[in-house]
Each structure stands twice: as structure tokens, then as C-alpha cells.
Image 1 (tube, protein in one colour):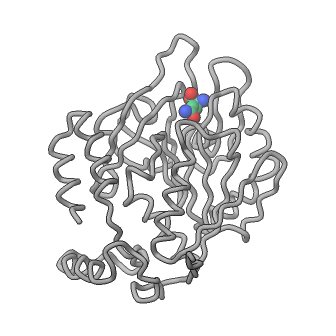
Image 2 (cartoon, rainbow, N blue to C red; image 1 turned 90 degrees about the vertical axis):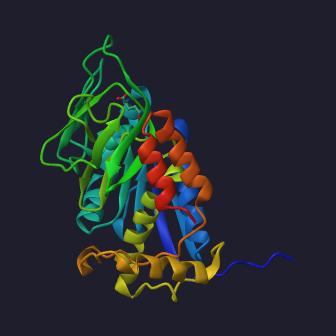
Length: 299
Ligand code: GLN
């Protein structure tokens, strides 16, 4: 008989508009978060938040909002502002990790001006705005790679809107692809622990380091700095010895300051994930980046 898994910690994820905003497998981001948590003895509870549902920030540890076409975005834009805006603002100011992809990213900035029809008012979490320059404007479509935290992020983008950053920091610098507006090489936006990006793909299955970054932020915020390797159930493929070996290997690196130190997560066997990541880099002609990613993350 299969044993029921016991969990040492729980992360509750609020998934905004799972039925309306789910382009190009955005839901795969949630499957990745759940699996990576489960392998470490952490439960990921997912609560869907649809039109009309209020968002009480105290009930969540992380938020996710995916992308959608203009016709799917318009009906949720008003609801986002009316039913969830204050809750999202409170969550963001309280350092909750938030991932917003494409249409969701646009609605977390000041506004989205579609090619046709009225502006959609956004929440202004990101000091940025998005305009679609008209039906004749070419869409930004294709694989994309960017520099993030001295590493790469890869994904697939498809958007008509061009996003311009005010004071918001970009998520990364475009290496290949269009990014926010196909002009300034910026991609996405960051405010506190809220991340906006155009990367579908899905994003997290091909970027396990970014998935872990979000998980680590959620754990740190909920359980504080006491989160250590020993406190996490060692339900990882290669076991705690591998985790220890990775720690020892990395001990020569310059330690980040305490404030930016995320809780340690047991490393997982991400061979497949990094092969998928590197194959996108290869396809984009970024051969040395692909080799570097494989070298850095070799199990
Ligand atoms: N409707 C937006 C645009 O085309 C967002 C598209 C998306 O979420 N992929 O700009």
C-alpha cells in the first residue's frame, strides 16, 4: 500500500484566473512548483482565484497569474482591480513572491492599451505600462533568452503589446528575442519579490533555478532564516549526501550577505531540466551559454 507523504512545511499558492489566463501551458509553472516542493517534503497547496473571488493576503504565501489573449484579459482586468487589487498590493508590500506572466504581467503594471478597444487599467505594482501599436504591428513571437542573476532564463514569448519601464527594474537583459518592447533589451520587471515576465514556455520547468528562487523566497518569508538542509525532509532523488557535496563544492564562492541569503533548498536531479534549458540556448545560437549552463548545473 502506498504510504501517505507527510510534509514538514506548507506553501499556499493563490492561482489567479486559472481558467481565463492559461496560455501556452502556464499551468506547467504550478506543476513544477508542486513537484519541486514535494521532493523536499514541502506541501504546495493551490487555491484558484476566479472572477468575483476576493484575495485575502494572509491566506497565501505566493501568487501566480498567467497570460491571455486580449479578449481573455479584458474581462479579468476590471475584476483584478476591483476584487483583488488591495489584497495584491498588501501582499507585494509584505514581500510575498508573485510571478506574473505576459498578460498577467501587463495587468500588474499601470495599464495595457490594446490595438482595439479601451485601455485596461492595471494595478501599478510595476512602474511600467504596455501599448499595442495597432493591428498592423508585428507581434513579438519566438524563443527568448535573457541574463538573470549571472545565469540565463529561457522561454517562449508571444505578445503584441510593448512594455516600457518607468522606475521598475527589469527582470533581465535580453540575449536573444524581443523582451519588453523589442527596443531596449529589457525583459520583465521586478518590484520587491514580484516578478513580471513575458516568458511562457512554460517558464519554470525549463528554469529550475528560478523556480527554486521563488520557493526559497516563500519559505524564507513564512518560516524565516531557520530553514536549513537538515530541517527539510531528505526526499530528494540523490539524497542528502549529494546536497552536502554541493554545499561543500560551493563553499569557496563569495557568500551573499545575510539579507539576500535565501533558505537552502536540497538540490534536485535537474539533468532533464537543464538539458531542456540548454537546448533552447542552442537553438538561439547561444552555444557558449548552453555549455556554461550544463557545466554549472551538472549533477
Ligand atoms: N494580450 C497581450 C498581448 O498580446 C498578452 C498576450 C499573452 O499573454 N501572451 O500583448
